[in-house]
Length: 323
Image 1 (cartoon, rainbow, N blue to C red):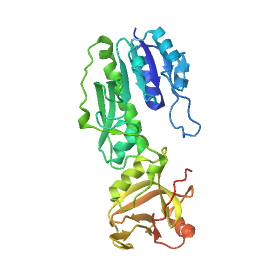
Image 2 (image 1 turned 180 degrees about the vertical axis):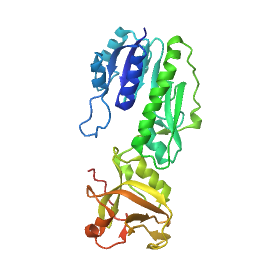
Image 3 (image 1 turned 30 degrees about the vertical axis):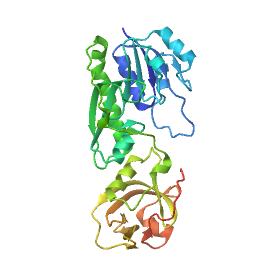
Image 4 (image 1 turned 45 degrees about the vertical axis):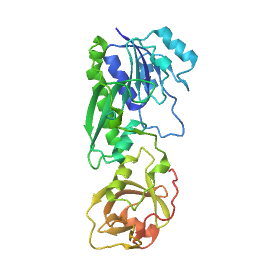
């Protein structure tokens, strides 16, 4: 039986920890994070799962402090695994594992190394993503690949739907590769980092909609940051609004939009019970879910709320206001 120390968080951490246990690994210790009270927690709790199996749990602010490193050395693990753990592990920690230290990353490496890989993939209009198990090195998400599983991103998939697919891809990848890791026959494929790129984390303020862009780019932003993430935001007739779900549509011919230097003034109109947003390019989006000042608004309610349409989109320096 192999002895393992696990660093884990989020749904990927929960599912991959269960894979290790199902395949008979001796998980000697789980390190995870305390949930941030200021963060919307919509995912599973690794600490609760570990405790349910009688596994000791630590939640250090910094896993690289000497006391933690010394404790893990005393456990003498064969493997270290990191499953969506949010801190980088030091080279000293990585060197402890006799048979290797591995990370499960939510993209098809070398693409989308770094933070928020699911959100960035959707934002860039990718049609597939996945999960990659790789050796950990001092450089993030740069180690040799052991296994990958791809999943599709459909044109109207929202971030939560894609993240759920990636979680399953992570579970399948680990379940498939783990026996080969144990018997020493797992592949080890060097990454060509020039074929990918590194992305930093995203902030709520990054969800501001630029109505001068093409409709597909706005649609990708909306679905990339949709709840449980902070959401895409704008202003409608000067009122702060969040646009939570959209669909790219052919522009109806009945409303050409208002003049705008170099194009059109982005506007929102109600046509036949549907909310249609015209971008500056003249392309259109149907708004399927809309919040104004934190309250859901339906097409028939908009005139009562904002006065007669059409309604101006953006251009009022709308500020992000979490709701």
